[in-house]
Image 1 (spheres, one colour):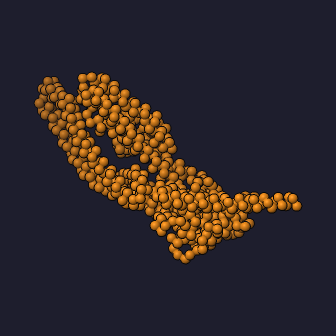
Image 2 (cartoon, rainbow over the protein chains, first blue to last red):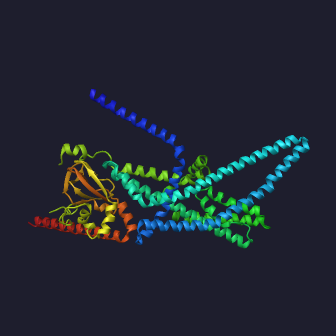
Length: 375
Length: 174
């Protein structure tokens, strides 16, 4: 009985320490997270890039190139493509934002401030109050400029990131197997095959999912661009920077259900601001283009390229998108669904492994094997 | 007669002393590989140490890959709730087992238990598939050799079956 009590006591003590360690780890992660957030984001982006670029690297390697050379070639190719497209897109974005700002200012803000001043002067005949209001407006202007400074600061860190991210991506692709082997070598023998199998399945499915999502976004982007280009041809260019808008629609498509709407809004806004003679018809055609793209995506593209293993209920999708938006804004909304997909795949594979592998010692192995002998 | 499923002495060449590289060369599925190709294989295998009585694989678990014994020995055991445990083979240095798991995830048909402290190399399907994708020429060489091993085993099993059948017929007809 004493022995039983001792065993129970030691079991309870073990459980207590386990729970204590888990709580301590969670607290530590929560404490450390704000400090490592930026580095973590860089690593996540590099990891996603490594998943996206790996098939291309594997292809070059299969043609006889060394892995390092294959990675370098792929990175140079991608970088050239990015520089070329950005040299076309960025001036477009700047011009779009400038024209949007000037139009918004002239149409809304200027009208609004003049109306306010007139209102105060007319109704209260109070120049001081009008000045106060103007001062407040100036204050807001200064704050806006301040946030612009913060924006440039973030651009600085962005520039640093675009050097660091390819560097980390290179090594993640080159040494991923070595990292995996080093990690798996620490796993006890009993869990070795289980861990290796689960790790491989997760890697495979997450890779397929991310590559599928990227391919889907690219195809939707191209289809939207082509659609907008045709509208521009027919209606004499009512949508400026259609390439940028089309690709943006592709990226927005990463958010299921909400993405297509988010993707169509910039095109509709630009068309309204551009105010072509037949605005109503143009807007109708923009909507038709986006609907057609969605039909093609849902009927053909998505079933072919996006992994079926991460199907999610619409309620879950909307919920995680809202949570993602609350945590990390637009980026959070964009990555909420893929991130949830990764968690879903990972947990389902862990459950599969635990169900299919015998983790307890078998009657003939470990302790019992040496004691009982064999029949 | 040696068990055609687990006994693989027919494939085993005389063991030379040396490192993993030399040991891999002794394994039939790697025996056709050039030194540079063997170095590639060496990069993706996992080396593990097992204590005496420790299970390497469990019967019924999903198959993941094959094991090659570098040092020590392993017993292949079939578990049966009614009949108990049945030893199918005892494998020593240079021998390999579980190679069929390189082809699919079918449950392991037997357990393998180290009967002394052993040093074992594991070569697994995920790494093999990755090798096939990255280095198709090398992957196909390994795949072809694996098919040869499986074919040879099938031939042996057929011979064994017909021998048993003959013995049965003889016994029946007096």
